[in-house]
Amino acid sequence: MPFSKTGGLADVLGALPQAIARLGWDVTLVVPRYRGTTAGTRVDRVAITVGGYHTDVNVYQEDIGNGARALLIEEPSLYDRDSLYASGGVDYPDNARRFAVLSRAALELSMRNGSGPTVVHAHDWQAGLAPVYLDTVYKSHPILGRPASVFTIHNMAYQGSFEPDWLPRLDLPWSLLSIDEMEFYGRVSFLKGAINHADAITTVSAQYAREIQTPEFGFGFDGILRARADRLQGVLNGIDTVQWDPATDPHLPAPFSRDDLAGKRDAKAAVLARYGLPADAAALDRPLIGMISRMVDQKGLDLIEALGGELSTLGATFVILGTGDTRYEDFWKGMAVAHPATIGVKVGFDEGLAHLIEAGADLFLMPSRFEPCGLNQMYSLRYGTVPLVRRVGGLADTVRDEQEGARSNGFVFDDYTPAALLGTLTRALGIYQKKKRWLRLQRAGMALDHSWDRSAREYVKIYERAISKGDSNGSR
Ligand code: ADP
Image (cartoon, rainbow, N blue to C red):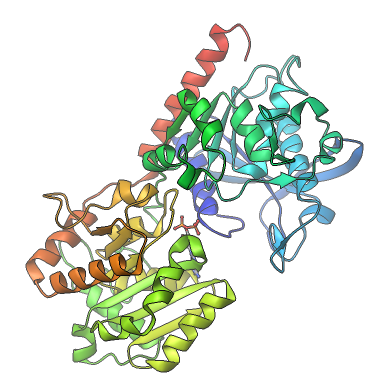
């Protein structure tokens, strides 16, 4: 676990089902069996029909712990592709069908136990039709007419919008092509459908829940979300505290903990060596700034690019890991060529190296334009690596600036400008020289609990509320 991954959604669905099962719920996760997934044993073959499109899918089952199970939907013509959603930067033209089949398969399979689910929890636009189907196709269904639906928005930037002529091919009536339904700038949006049909809507931090109700962060959905504000709530993601534990992490040369941080210097030496950077005593004394990120605008790469060569004058070393837009990959590669002793760059996806950077860096850079929750800053906090973030979304909810009192654990800037980033970087590097103050920041971060249990308890409350609301209405 996770079975497949492009970003944080995989981390969430790799951990949340088990955490909810730990609280006594019977949880089934349904995901596509994408190319490269080998998990599960074949347990079923079911016929799915969506808008006249008929297919037989194979269902694989895998136990994922605490009694929870994953059902992986195998349909090679839909899911056995080079990547998950797009090829060469262009979305697959049949994404509407690919994910309609996923939602339909999940709902059909949920009836296998005879009584059906009490709650259907859908994540992001890919599962956005599940609440819509429950409220339309299955509204009067003896079993599927009953469950409450919860929809979680992991990132408003991805909206699942398609040409309107998809509606009949999704088994949906033309009436849904209305401004109060799924219509969004002449197209149909799965995201909007889910927002308008789910009994409860959540997103992945309290701050992001507020932000997406504003034009700056709402991607045109802010009005719809304000209208549904009474059912919108933020639940901060957790992190996998077993995978991400500096005391037991197999990717580190030596364990360390809040009480004994000595092993962190070993990780610093190891990460410098992995990047082919000098790792002598002087290099180990220089502050090391880490960044692990998809290299896209969202993550503040344009701010960093604007600072350019100025970064090399700060007296720090940089280790960068990520993939994304060619423009940003090329920027960082150019920086590494120009400053071979102090800037290391690896373009690629490397889980083990990500752990080593989190452990070996002194400061972690996350200057996002927007950040629904963000996981890396929570890993950083747990690894005694002080995060430097912009005050948005989950970053604002987890990082407290050095100047903001007792529970400070990082550095936070407000304005999305290169100058604000540079000013805060300079301030942070100044404090790095004050060893006691730095240690206080590290230890405050390491004391925090970002485990999934806390988030799971909040989701369960939301489920229970959604169920009881449906019961008191006499229907869903
Ligand atoms: P997002 O979901 O927007 O990409 P998050 O911070 O929520 O951002 O989650 C990103 C996840 O993907 C983290 O677990 C992070 O460590 C991981 N990640 C991103 N890029 C890489 C990479 N190049 N190599 C290894 N892990 C990566």
